[in-house]
Image (cartoon, rainbow, N blue to C red):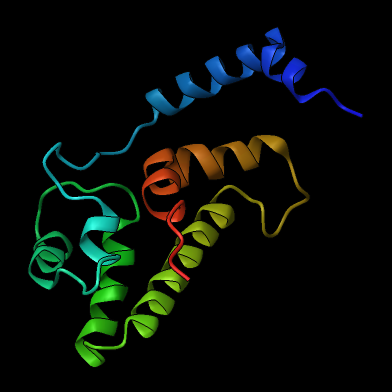
Length: 141
């Protein structure tokens, strides 16, 4: 059996994490301003916070990568069926998958044999940690 704790303690993993963090920092996209509400605050309460979502989707302020795409899908669901949270969540989930698929395609993971470098670029550079931790990490379905 593999000793996971030894892997986490390994110099190889620390080196890999340091290198990936440097790659992310070098290629970082604009992030949301510090006061912007989180995805969960905007879209996962009892109702979608439509005014603030509209301001983000149609505004010029930077937002976390993928945030506008996912929120705009939730807004469509809210506009069509304001009392149907299930439909809103389904549309936002589809937008999440589409956003991640676009990153995979851009990194060559769809039409080429799998390469670890492509997976790293897709997940951590193109999709980005703000998307993975701020949007995908929430249980929306």
